[in-house]
Length: 140
Image 1 (cartoon, rainbow, N blue to C red):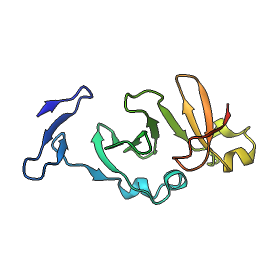
Image 2 (tube, rainbow, N blue to C red):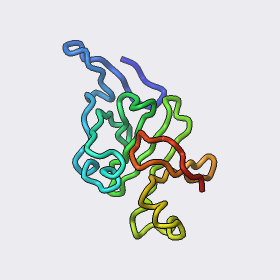
Image 3 (tube, helix red, strand yellow):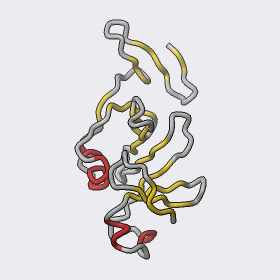
């Protein structure tokens, strides 16, 4: 048993060898996230093993060198970050009509790229649509 620096309590199920976070085993993403259009556009049919961390679900291990955090609320928020929590990017929905931040972006930049907000640098990075396509095409 151990208290993590992230506010979670870690233990091991001695029968299965499974790591428990706050007494719970890792799980998969719920259908409410898997069926979200933004999630489907970015991650396709991929599902991740996640652990609960407050109001978020976080990937249990890195995926192509990054971790992902998904909000549990009614509005899906997706974050990508390195293991040390650096380079935190927030996935923006540039395809939805209700997003005023993207109103002046040409349609091809909306439809052919994913949009990741880097708050520390106050920039938006445009990459390929798939989450593992990290080649930066444009910076706004």
